[in-house]
Image (cartoon, rainbow, N blue to C red; front, side, top):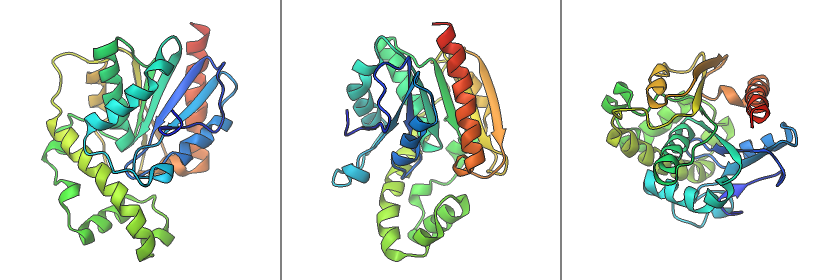
Length: 255
């Protein structure tokens, strides 16, 4: 559990667990801090994938199935008998969604809510037709990373730092490219939980509406000022936590 999950604020008696899935190349520290922003009724668990932080010596995952298998194997005992929700930004939107679908299909479990951020639905047409980012040469890949924003200038301008930063990012982008190109729109929604999309107003256009086709539950879109990493802005981060908290309070009253 401790290898996969980073939980700064352990709350075994919490009514709800919020599991946060990292963006491509990301670690667990950003979300682990969120535990201090929620009250005692919520335990925040941040997913730590292989090849980064305390798992830096482990090989990167090669497929979405690998990620899903590890997450479910470790978390399944924690998900039974207690309400849980998922949050994922960018690459994390896809890993959280894919994990939620597998949980429902195989175990009949489902998050009370799925929060996805900064990402089109996996069956969005332009995702299938766009150039694979994982096939860009090093120069083009770095140019794309710079254009997305969110990466500190001290990393982008430091060759040694880039050698540590780029490998996990590229590994996750490969998983992403293969996942979206093999994902077809299902005949019926695979989920029944409510789903909220968050996005930055200045980010590239995302097909957020298509997420509604993946659940039969309530659906909402909520945009905040900023680009792809709008959630790193302290004001937006506070707004995100407030939004999620209010939703969880409503869910807990109905338990």
